[in-house]
Image (cartoon, rainbow over all chains, first blue to last red; front, side, top):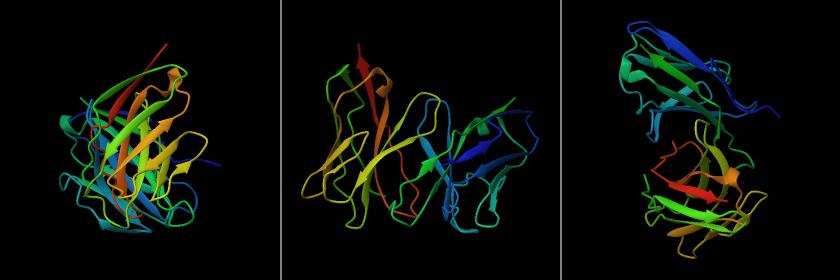
Length: 115
Length: 109
């Protein structure tokens, strides 16, 4: 079946512009997670959705970052007034409470470059 | 969050078994041990997970000690395509997964 998809795959934007990153989770997966990975670094957790609610937003680095999820499916991560330190690969993952017992399946990521 | 310790790097000859250890001595009773790998420039790939019994799937085997404080991921016949960074992560549904530095496995021809 289809895995997690993300769009765009690459995004180059000028400092100060807003960007939106999209994640389509695996159909039926109730949990959705956003992470980011800076060059040569490990994964950094940003936010977790259960359905359309976000019980854990602890990883969002500043109020310029926000995310929403609609219909228990697609999620959008928005970064306002982008800064060069926002440059990273943004990864989305989804998981199910069912028989799979919680493993997260990751998308290919969106590589964001802020110039 | 439970803390993990993994060797920073390992080498393995192609066709041999790769055994990757992980210490997770502070794992909670309801947390599974998940293993992922990340090949350069790709998203993390799920490999296998377990609670307390040993597990095997088409990719790997997972051996968990009886006290659950450590585990070993076994790739039975490593290929060049298995070169990647491997992560062990204690966790459960609804938890954010904490990816440590992992083990960089190099499979050598």
